[in-house]
Length: 87
View 1: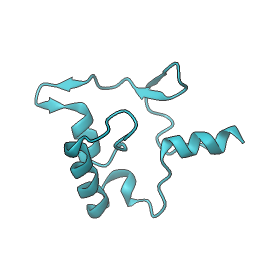
View 2: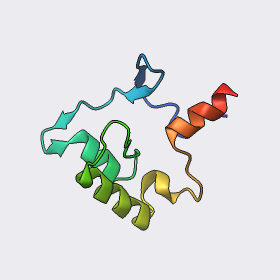
View 3: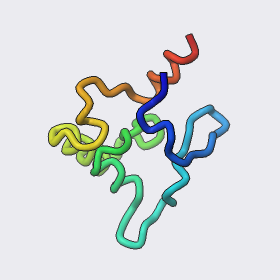
């Protein structure tokens, strides 16, 4: 079972998480994290950005509009998907 975004460029972090390498942290017209969350291409990872009301709001809007991964009726967060793979 592969994640739908499994063919995107990435690198592995020490904790086993994957980081997309196609974008840096900042873009000429804004923050990459905010853009990706707004467009529905990634999750707001609360563990690493707790209390980030900007990302929270952007994810909520993306979910409501069913953008990106939220178009899937049952999207699986990466941290849950990794747990399933460990079994």
